Image 1 (cartoon, rainbow, N blue to C red):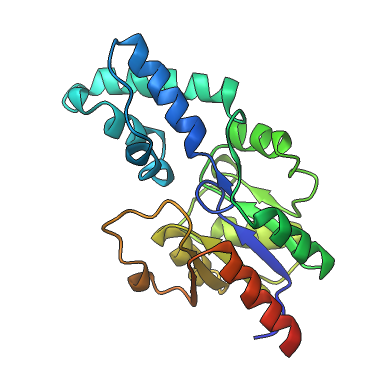
Image 2: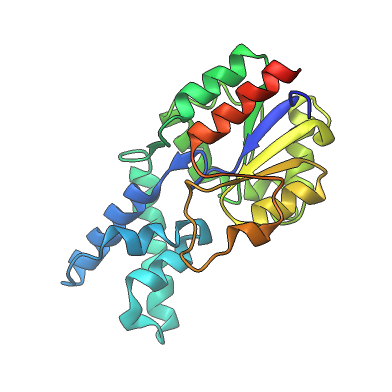
Length: 225
């Protein structure tokens, strides 16, 4: 394939490692309930599934108490909104990869199922907001991933044809959304992949185990173009 017009990323688990903040908040909540800390791996594994999934994993003792789970989720989100960029950072290798894209005049952006009230301050806190050609959040579309609507919206904002774009994500819904929009899809093997997930079954056009693999692949494309 030729060089893409744009590369779009899922946010949590693909572009930004937000699990450290999720883990810190969960353990603050557990401490308030006089519960021992939960290990990082247990939280990291479900970050891509959203706040409710994180709370269920972090508080298995309340699995049959829906009201308590909702209360904890709301407390989690309130804390997260106040502290969402304390520990989060770009995954290793991605700062250089974004610079590589920009040097090639390739737009890049974000398509996420995360609401804008969390996404916007996170992007600002990481100095990514002004660099992103398009950032599309869950509350800015009528249908979220795996529906292709947010993908088409991102391409439209960036002023590119979706069929000439790449979408990178760490969840099967990311790959499905990208494919339904006609984008070339890349599964981010460095992301929040469940141990039981068969990433090969997602149907991605390419699987990259690391950001280094992704960068090497793009470099190969530049030599062919």
